[in-house]
Amino acid sequence: MRALNVLILLLAVFNPAFAQQSGQKLESYLSDIKKQEFSYDYKKVEADSSKLRDSWIQPLIISYAYSKSDPYKNSQESQKAAIVMDQPIFQSGGIYYGIKFAQASRKYSDYTIDVAKRKLIKDTVALLMQIKQTEFKKQKQKLQIKNAEINLEQKKEEYLNGQLDSGFLDSAIIQTNEANQALFDIEANEQKLISQFKSISDMNYETAEIPKLRILNESEFLKNNIDIYQIRSQEERDRYNKNVTVSKYLPKISITAGYNWDKTKNQQYGGSGITSSGETDYYNYGIKASIPLDINTFRDVESAKVEYLKSQVVVIDKKRELKALFEQVMQNIKNFENKIQLSKKNKELYEKLLEDTAQLFQAGYKTQYDVDTLKNSVEIQKLDTKIYEMDKQLELLSLYEKFKDEI
Image (cartoon, rainbow, N blue to C red; front, side, top):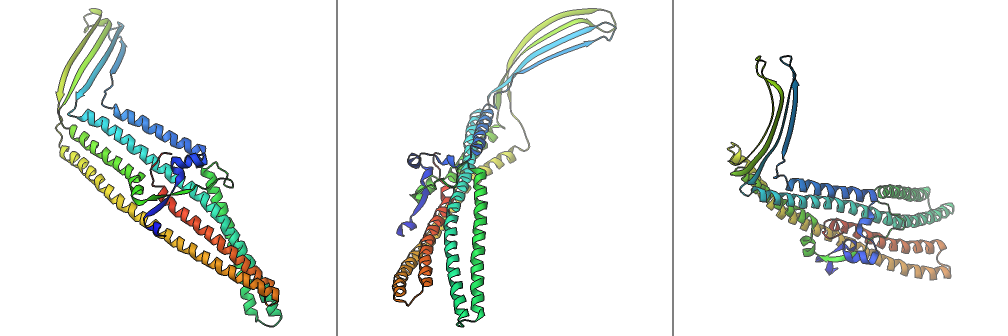
């Protein structure tokens, strides 16, 4: 119990050590189609990042034009072609920061996909755990139905013997019906969970193993938190974006170059009847400097600065949020631990009562109903312990989802 104040449990399957023990990676809980979707997401991010990284490289403009006319009843033809380059070579740091911004954007986008992926994996594992837990709940409910039926039989006998009025018998009937209806609800919920699990996983829920858990301290959880990494990458992206924004309004130097080609046939000038044909080509090159003067310069730069300052604050806020999440999970785990301890004490109590009742039954002072009821009660407490243990695992998934590690 003392460890609960400073430690959390984390899915070890998210850790390479688990992969070696279980022979499978956490990703295997997802269906092949889901894994393929995430694979395409990562590839798209890579392509977009490369495009953004090289966006400072201007394209070569290649043009060609052909025209034919007969304004003076004389067919004329003209062809023109050109290759033009206008390439910035200095943007007051804008090229460097643009490349860094592209790299930071890719990192942020990758983390965004990681977050979504871990969320889906967490949901998949949670569904599997809930399915397994539902099996325990069904077993427990069936035992409660047996106890309700035993109680009903006792009330019938007592009523027929004139020892009870009909009100007690009616209550026993209602209790039995409610116990059966609760089982129907559990079975219906189980089918719903199975359907949801099948929609995102190719595993057989009946044979799939539930991931084991390992212990991790709070500082490690915060240090390796995927949300923190994502927000820090956003902070880095916003910092470079601020620098890129500033550089847009500073001097820029570009080199220009071009090649032009013209060809004419039967070109006539006015109505003189004089025509000419010919072919020419030439090139040009040079350098130019420019600086934009924009009325919104200050506003644009200020907006980028504010966005960067906000991202710094968000990191601090997210840490507080995660710490609160950690504390809440630990409190919930402590509550489940208390329930587990209580169910264990109840089991011991029922076991002692069962032992005494069995002896009294042999002596003729108790009925088989009493023995069977206590046997069922002992098993119910055992199942309660398993159910609460699974509740702990489900609670911990909200922490596992946030933990950053290699898949």
